[in-house]
Length: 280
Ligand code: CAA
Image (cartoon, rainbow, N blue to C red; front, side):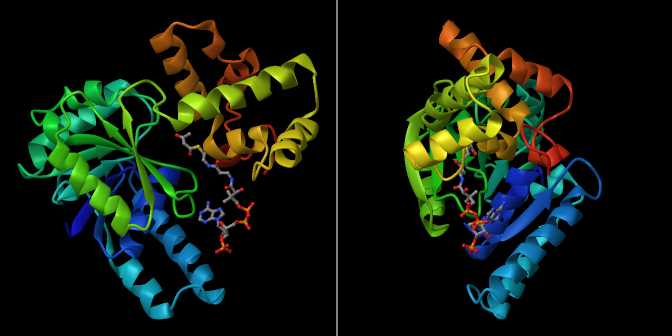
């Protein structure tokens, strides 16, 4: 594989594009909103230049990675790759529409991957005529830093597709784990109920934002507290995952915290909107 298309140039899409370019792939970066992919490319360049300043990357490697990323004007252009990774927002209908369009535009051997954190891979694959070549590649935020990629096997994903993606993950210098297509996969099924519980505790007044975060940071050695992490990931993303867990398993332990729902309705989505549990 030489070229990777990335659909969606938000937090995750731009992080994935950066990881792919630094690992030696040519990248076609597309976002449905005009100008977003070009802005993401500038952000990637600024981030890589900081790595150069810190002496962690050579200027030549930085320039090569930036030059490897092309902003694609259309989805069809971004589909001209051996692998396309979709990182659009967590809406099943939107992802299915995107995969149907990618299925039409891409060559017959192209693997279509989704960075979905909660939506069924099998459902996404059903929008295509190549379910054996549809797979989950779930990166973690911030993608350039976090080592893990969860590889998700849908109902029809072939072993050849899994092997090809495992090789890409290895070339990216990341660790892969294989998970079945069950809601939340491995990480979000364990992590998000903990984040949701922290929000319940805040609502009940068990502790302040700072105390809840410090408790988990210093009591459990987590790199950041659960409320700060929810701000980083996005409250809308956590709510979407909790809704899927609640619906799919039908267990009240996955009920989203009312405060989480209220803050999403208020547009307080965390770092990306300038305010969540903290102000940025
Ligand atoms: N993009 C690129 N690099 C970033 C970054 C970003 N957004 N944020 C931090 N970094 C880099 C910094 O540049 C720094 O790099 P150097 O060491 O090369 O200088 C390094 O990460 C450490 O950053 P900081 O010193 O600023 O801060 P830190 O040591 O507190 O680390 C952190 C920041 C990596 C985010 C760390 O706090 C952490 O690991 N937090 C937990 C993150 C986590 O759990 N992510 C998974 C979320 S779940 C998910 O994403 C799945 C889903 O579907 C919801």
